[in-house]
Length: 122
Image 1: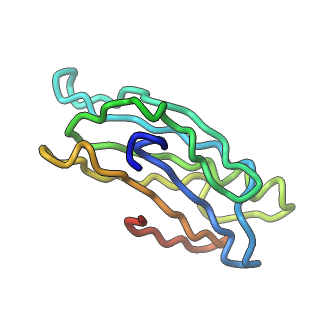
Image 2 (image 1 turned 90 degrees about the horizontal axis):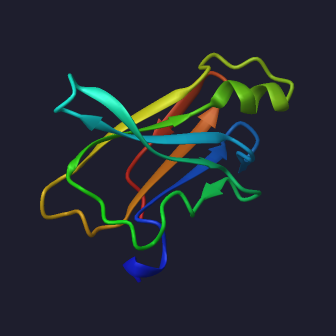
């Protein structure tokens, strides 16, 4: 099934109300160790009505081993809900190891105005 979906997906759940985090801008970057450890953009997305970004990368995209960073623009989400949240954005840094590039990586974010949790999903 790995060839039929983006190799990296994400999901935002607003745990303060038990609903999907809709319309959250998401940016995916990779650490470029050859360029002074700067971050290079890989993809952008926006969570859908179910709080998911399943099309971040083309299904044929071949991941490379490295350190990745996913940034969720949570301030925009909280503003759309009429809430003042504490974290203006959430950055999740994770590693794709050599030999594991063909695996699927799912990054869930459970979000509330004053906390967040993440884990490696399936």
